[in-house]
Image (cartoon, rainbow, N blue to C red; front, top):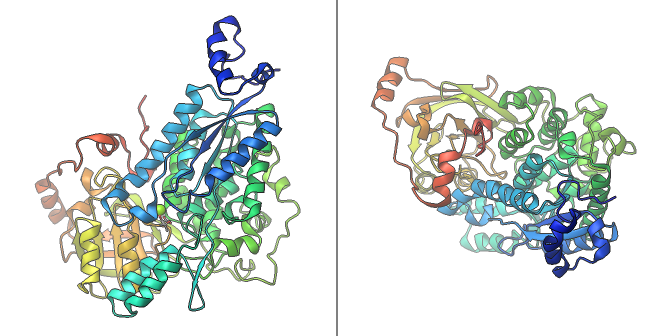
Length: 561
Ligand SMILES: CC(C)(O)[C@@H](O)C(=O)O
Ligand SMILES: [Mg+2]
């Protein structure tokens, strides 16, 4: 039976003869018209180490798809590098690139009536971008992660790119010499692969493994190891089976599997970005999920893994210790994972995990035993209050002072804030406010890794708070609250804060509050003028018009119907 179930492009009789003529030019023979046509969304780019090994994986996937009886058709998807654009105006394109990737995969797969898609990505937005498209289209699909980078080494310590960001703060605070800063820069990124801690890329790949849209163990493999290519080949075989069986993404991406992904992200200590991306994926899959669901799951799931940014180990260490399947099995054994969710293999989560022990191995301390977690509850909290009536996202574990009330130090951009930190103008007890960096205001919610790392490097990590309507890197930690919604640009209270106002971040109470009388707030609100958009042409201008609040995932196709 022909697999071109979606359209009759190649089986549609004489009318389709011209379509077939073109396919013959790209290598189709008579018998190939009876095979499924599978897109390979190739995120290859030498712009960033995260994506530079992906072409080899795409080639391997193509070869294996052919062996499994499919006709692969490769097309390129774009990426930007968060690490390289970090701290620049270019970072505004990062979250935008998520939509571009989603739109490009949807455009090619639907435009060409493909029977399935194997998407390969590396840098942070590649993962959610691909999954948004997969959830929208609902054609059989598998996600292949390009793999994590191995750690660099200096003075007996493991390095990641975040070490280089923190070294800037250490240097500015006079804690290290410039020679040391340069050594760290040279050694932080020793090869191919996405940033090595449990930062955003590794968080999202882990989430997809937990959701059943990627093969087990695949999200923590090193980009440069042979098993990455082997797992890619296996993904191709699994996808062809999914096409034959018509296993569809929306059978896999369900409310329950998104809850599994959230539970795993809490257990591994993942990035704040996961909140934004999983809300967006739920919207694309038409699954009900709200920002408050993260708080509910956080309350019952412990942080089990000792991973960077705030912990000790990197993703390759987690892999050696048993990887995401070990974490999932522990959650399953303690009733915190839905075992009946379908995976792309056709097996349920419980079936996939059946041979994995319920406790981690004793010869490692990356994954803690159940009785000795890093933290009894998850680290990604949803804070609300007059400053964030729709919600905000904070990393609340690992900070010594979970409550801070301090004077606001207001910055209208990330650059202004970084300059103040590096110039030593921030005092212990200050609450830094970085605003007009939201989905519409930035636009694009830049990741504030440079200021948050400079704070850590300057030794102020436990002494100051920081709130923003922008985002954070997966490498950020400390008393930081991002995704503050509503954002300043649309009139959110964060835009009305004045220098010296008292702000309280209360992590245990999950509250974010401006301590200014209501009458004064109303006076300021009446005087507030919406600012002019920063961009009036091109993609940033289009994005700013369409994008939703971060509290519902910063998506560009909400309520368009
Ligand atoms: C550069 C990083 C560390 O990859 C960052 O973009 C993240 O979000 O994790
Ligand atoms: Mg990032």
